[in-house]
Length: 151
Image 1 (cartoon, one colour):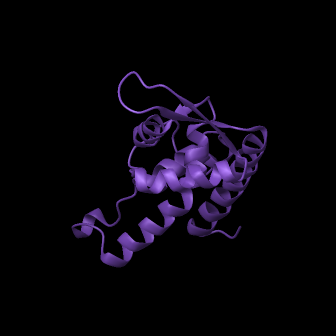
Image 2 (spheres, one colour):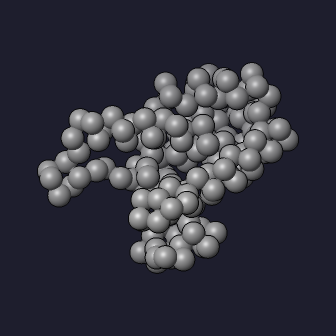
Image 3 (cartoon, rainbow, N blue to C red):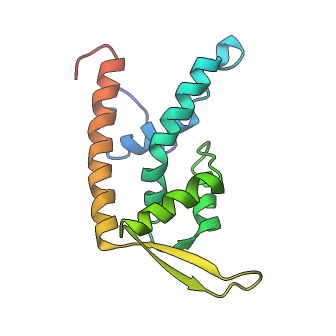
């Protein structure tokens, strides 16, 4: 059973939640539990795969509205084992703002310094839609390949 409640199987890629299920699987995979934990090469591969997904995940965390940095980190953490740190997320937010994919507004905080709120722009929503389409295609191809078929 997958996090969305669907049962993975040969027709899983026809399920619209499948890409999210695949993202869950990719980000939760700790590797080789049966051998006592992941090997160093496996840990490296997992880290590189997760790094490549962070921008997509940060943008997806903003798809339902604006959030300040800590809220984004919480949303990513709530997604499961997609543990990322401020030192990973904030540079991505700065770059996304520079590329006009997110807008930033500063507002007073109930406690502490002012908060920077991030929100997807129209261009950011379009980029996220493109990234989502590519993700769906990529997941389908990779799953077919690793299942023994050809894409």
